[in-house]
Length: 563
Image 1 (spheres, helix red, strand yellow):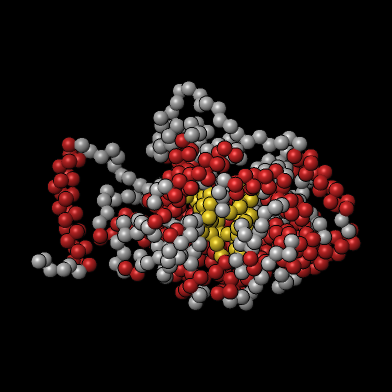
Image 2 (tube, rainbow, N blue to C red):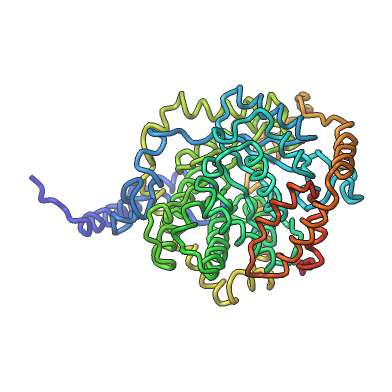
């Protein structure tokens, strides 16, 4: 019998064997048939070795570990999908609240297990539907929500204690949360039974998505207030959904997506802790949102790396004791930026593979894009195909039966470690600039993303980055027409009429008193905005009236452009 090898001996033996293989079999074969390119890289540009071996595994088994056990590399829960399939949360939103409510009911009937709401641009920017800046945008790329009755209509006939709800909104997020709470209270629901999340990640707006109302620091105060309000009242609700998705869609690579998301997370946690809130009282309700891009193995490694980094950060930087405070839970969405107008049916394949990488990476919730989203918001048929994609992965492939099935892969483990190390390298640069807010004000994140986006565009234009149907395997004949969503042209006028009627019918004294009280609270940086905002929406003050009044307190923000 051969003597047992230690890990160190195994690595030495494998390294020696690799060198011999390169000098003999590989050299002889490539002399006859060279590889197709001189170097290979991941989707984000990191170099890829030809082959990986046990020498690429972490030296410490604990870095890989077991699911549900610190540092959670392999998943936040011990049973993962064997205990509960990820939440299938298709996003929807268009027209008036009643129209979107109809889409929700359709998706629930098709087997969707969680709701996700898209809001139109006026709502996102805190404008009313009758604002002159809103013309032509009301209900166009999301649902229009001006007042509390709109929110009530949005969830008409839907049991908010039984279905999880995600609200995808940022600069005006606290107002939507106030409306959601007010609807629940009017229906006599238990706030501690409500589940879901509000995105509410304002820092990534300054970094990537560019939707804001107020300057950075008062916007941070609003996020702090929502987190502290929910910590004591809404046990199952996530008051912030910290998003790398939009950072990626702006042009960042996989490493930048998770590094910048972790930097933003640190800024929020620092702010709430500085307000005197114990980390273990709110960290369990922090949630995350990442993209699932085209490079399948890099994406799986990305999810594993950020989960491990977060666990270590929460334990060592903040002294978290509760395991729930160290478990990174995330929603994933397939990559909208990869969808193409040419050969749109190819988007079904892209989405399926991206969804698979999210599942292999351990997502808790998943949205799959519609095949027609390069044209417009998805049709019912496209949404159904996207949902069926998730259901096929869940029920037909047996992929969910094994937890972290790529764990131990020489390649995936090496990528995981490299990405985790890369996060720390970015943190060092950010700290040198004075922290996250200072780095935003100096344009650091914006420059990093724009440089990466430009490099990707050049690679795509040259054909170095193939896109099937666009720069490779291009059809000479036009694509067959596909069904696309059509917005009711009367929807905007109906929404404006309803808004004006609500203003006319409300109690003017209550509305005026509520707005005065909200402004007074806003002037006190140590006060919490949420209770006064809840009273404001109950008094039927509109989105635009609330944000307009607070602009006089907080001011506005203009970014220094980065080219």
